[in-house]
Amino acid sequence: MLVLDQLVMDFSGFRAVNGCSFSVAEGSITGLIGPNGAGKTTLFNLIAGAMPPTAGKITFRGEDVTRLSSDALFHKGLVRTFQIPHEFDRLSALENLMMVPPEQPGESLVSNWLSWGKVRKAEQEVERKAYETLAFLELTHIAHERAGNLSGGQKKLLELGRTMMTDAKLVLLDEPAAGVNRTLLRKLEQKIEILNKERGYTFILIEHDMEMIEKLCDPVVCMAEGKVLIEGGFQTVRSDPRVLEAYLGESVEA
Ligand code: ADP
Ligand code: MG
Image (tube, rainbow, N blue to C red; front, side, top):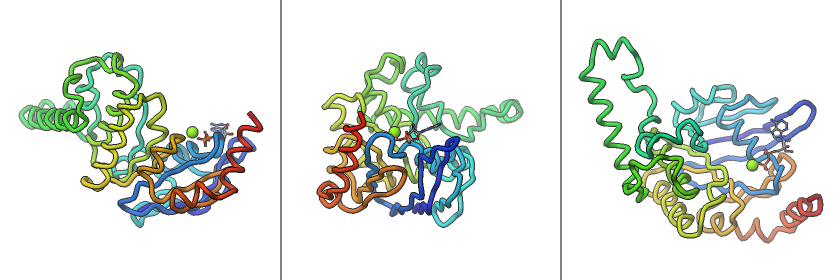
């Protein structure tokens, strides 16, 4: 589904991504691990079109998408979750979901004038989908709660829900477990698994929580110093001495 070929990203002389290559199979949950500073988040930024790579090529579903904008990629089904922006804190959970869908006819003033009925219908459809998403996430009880009042875990679930409002094919999750309590963490894992198995979402998951990686991910790719150190099954990667060394290097520096 996704092929990364020798990606490089330079930040004014510093090479954050240094010849990174790997592939993501359709239907997989691919885990991306590695010590802090390995370049994982930067790699996500490249894949999602937040910035163009210095060099290398990205192919998504057979198409060269290396220099496409995040907006263009979004419409192709490549979606990255973001923290709910502060401006959305005052909106309810339901409204946060309803803000997501692209290409709503209501967005154009002209179409508002000309086809009020069509706009109304599209809005109702979006609302229905938002309620369905909240039900899937077991968040119906907080539908009208302000997003700003939700717990860390509920926010993460809602962020996952925002991807469900789109026609997502490949979803990039950057440390979804960070700051989430145990109970909601299990729920988050379970929802990711269902989205993968039953709704056909492919995921790339960056996570430091190794329990979550072990439970959900195959294969696991370990990055260090901007490139792939090793990839394979969780047990293979975990028991590789180079992986341990990469993480030890991190703590020595710290
Ligand atoms: P990870 O997510 O694996 O912890 P990052 O991709 O966030 O790693 O960072 C990789 C390296 O690139 C780090 O040394 C970081 O300081 C650097 N870096 C990331 N973004 C920028 C930027 N916008 N400008 C300069 N350096 C950056
Ligand atoms: Mg990161």
